[in-house]
Amino acid sequence: MFKKIIFIVLALVIIAAGWYFFARDKELSSLEDLKQQYPDLTVYVDDVIKAQAGLSENKDEIENYVILGFNWKTLADWARPAGVADYLGYYRKALDVYEQGIKKTFRRNTLLMTNAGNMAKYLGDYKLTESYYKEAISVAPGDESYYIYLAELYEYQMKKSKEEILAVYDEGLKRVLNIGWLTARKEAYLERAEGGK
Image (cartoon, rainbow, N blue to C red; front, side, top):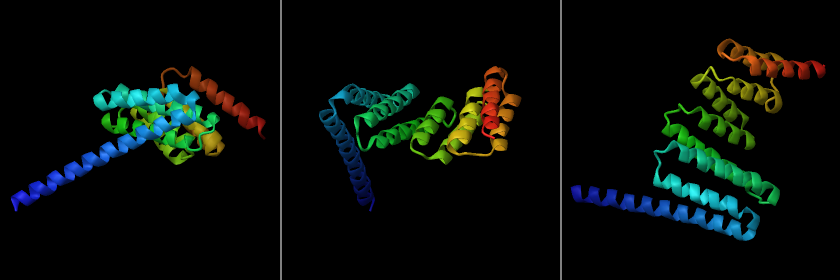
């Protein structure tokens, strides 16, 4: 019985490893195909491949998640005007990498959270964007930029009410030390809101 269990566990490990290497090779192959079809994207594809290797070598270095996510995002940014049909898939890859980093940091890294929120915004998932921006606020309530990101998401993408948008600015003004930038953004919003009436 014990030998059967060991055999089954060993077989599962071999299957999982094979699947991992197959998926990784398939992704590398599709990136190489992309370089062939769109030579202008070569530098961005190479940056992704290099960053993937860096993350594979050291999954404990948080900077590697930031770099790989950024490189996927940059590839998406350049793939869109080049006419790549599935450029949104690269934003999805960036989001996946940032989410891995968020888990790795026990949900304490606000750079990864806001980057994940930005990728979700590019993908049109505004509820997920809102969730990451709110989480960044809860982790670092003294950073004014997170309130601005959330307020602008509410204004431009989610089309929330004036009261909901002002509530975000007002919450931030109660919690941050340097209120200058936040005050200026709130005033600019009020001018836009009043001008729309």
